[in-house]
Image 1 (cartoon, one colour):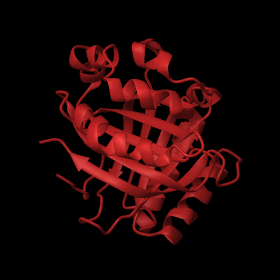
Image 2 (image 1 turned 180 degrees about the horizontal axis):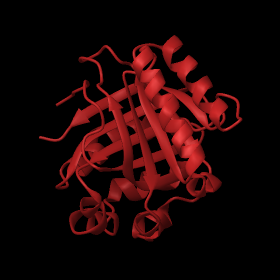
Image 3 (image 1 turned 90 degrees about the vertical axis):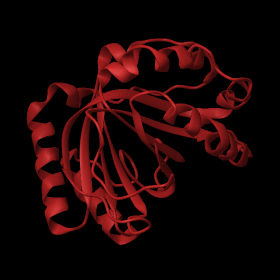
Image 4 (image 1 turned 180 degrees about the vertical axis):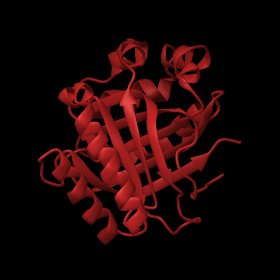
Length: 229
């Protein structure tokens, strides 16, 4: 089932940025569409999955999972699944490049998404490691996100902060990803109605960190949006 139209579901989430090896995009997307997302959404507590492809920025793909709570990603079926990759997963994950993956708790969730097909852009701001210790920066980001929602540039915005213990756990899937980048302290992700609104929002969020859009703040076109059940 494909569904757009609500703010973040649940109190936890997973955010993944990755590229792929040259010529591997079609295989990655086919695996993601036909096996991987369905596999994840079958896990208890996994409520929604979205994948975006970059309009600007260095990481080609952004994947978001809305999760009921931290227990659902820290216990039981999810860790077991990570330690038992399927044959197709074993073939595709080594093709992933520059992967950054964080397991998070939701700090703030604002606004409501659009109806089906109306919001077609995602904005994602990576929070560098130092931000995890800077409460004033996180407060500034939350305040700017609230303004972006109230002004209509974003229809929803969620601030997710990395859970260190959950993110640090090593599994069989980690060994399959050949390249890794620095682990962000969290992410601020939002949904926008169109490209112009998303680009404006990305610029303002990047400005909080003193950065340019297309670096830590990227715009993605939504390719897949599915809900469990």
